Length: 219
Image 1 (tube, rainbow, N blue to C red):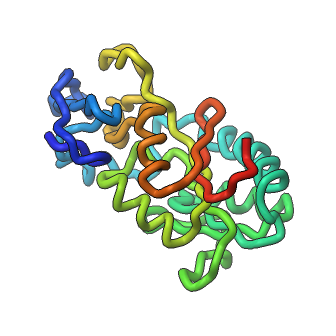
Image 2: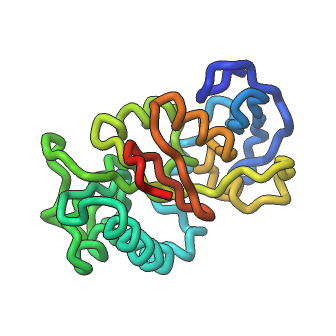
């Protein structure tokens, strides 16, 4: 299978049962370290509910991210500008950020905006930075999504769990999300550095929080 990040040949490494019914193959790229599933034919079934029912930390995660993102934007970006939460789910994060005082807007083509109504993003508006949390692992075509994000801003703040080295077996890593079947793309640090270099961006991360940026003054 061809790697969806760098275009090199990926190698089959294991199969795992998704949604308790589909035996799915996983492929790892020796060049950039990206791990991907075979073509994901089961996604319509997996997204019967856009926010999967096993995501029990949804609200607490958004509260934590609002605090972390507030610090990042205040320290390193023009915090008085507009910001966009891409694939923003029900709008919880946007609501929290607006309550703090940031001019945040919402976008999500799959989920209903429940908490940030009236603050839907107008695609003609320029933004200082884009946030997109727990979305990279859902991307069917990650590089196409990167192109979309970069047309909005060259500053992208996102979360995803880094693929461990060595690669865990299916029953050794919760982030495979085998029960809900929505996680289909997995990135090592090497993968994200490859993406940053491809688009002439700086890359840095702390834990599961990552930044692609055109700015030079972030350390």
